[in-house]
Image (tube, rainbow, N blue to C red; front, side, top):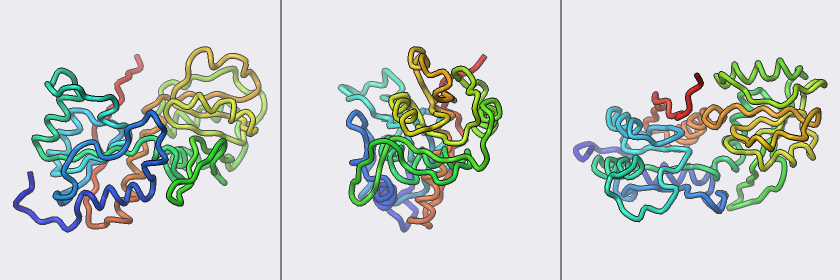
Length: 271
C-alpha cells in the first residue's frame, strides 16, 4: 500500500529486534507466536501499530495511520486455518491484512517469559523493587526466561490499600480477591494473563500477594491467610505490553514510526 515511498527499515529488521529481546523458543509449547502473515523480506516498514489483540478495527486503524506492520501480544492465528472464506473474524482479518499489505507479528508467551517482558512491566507499574523471576527458569539464545516475576513493594501495604492501588494503576473496575490478608503485603508475585498455574509456586516462594489476570473459581479455595489473591482481568493485566514493543523498536530501529493503538480490544464489559 506504500509502493511509491521509500522506507529505510525492512519489516524483517523490526521483527528480528523483537525476537532478540524475546526469542521465539521461549514461548510455551501450545503457543503460536512470531510472524503471522506478510512478506517481511520485501516490505519496508512504513510504521508499526502496537496492540494487545488484532481485531478488524485494529487493522483499519493501521491502514488509517499508514502502518504496514501490526505488532500484537496475542497471536491472531492461534488455531490451524483449514480454509479462509471470511466466515469468522480471524479469517476476515487475514483477508483484509493480505489485501492491504499489512504484516502481523505476535510476541506472546515468549514476551511473557522474557526478562524485561510482560511480567516485569506489570511489576514496574506496581513500583516493585528487586523484581526477578520465580519458579522454574530456562535460558534460550542467551536470554533467561520464566513464567512469573516477584518483587517487593517500596513500603508494606494493607490488603485493602494494595487492592485499591491495583484498581488505580490498572484502571480495574473490579478485583476478584479471596479473604483479605490480615498481615501487611510486602512480597508480590506476578503473572499476567491466565496465571493460576503459578499460585502454588508463589506461596512456596513466600509471596504475600499473587496478582494475575484470570483464575477459576475452585482455585480460590484453601488459600485463606496464606496469600492474597488478586485477579485483575486478562486485558487489564497485559494492557501495557505495547510499551515494551515501543521501547524495543525505538531503541533498535529508531527510524521506525511507532503508534500505540487507540482501540480498546477488551471483549469483556463490566455492568
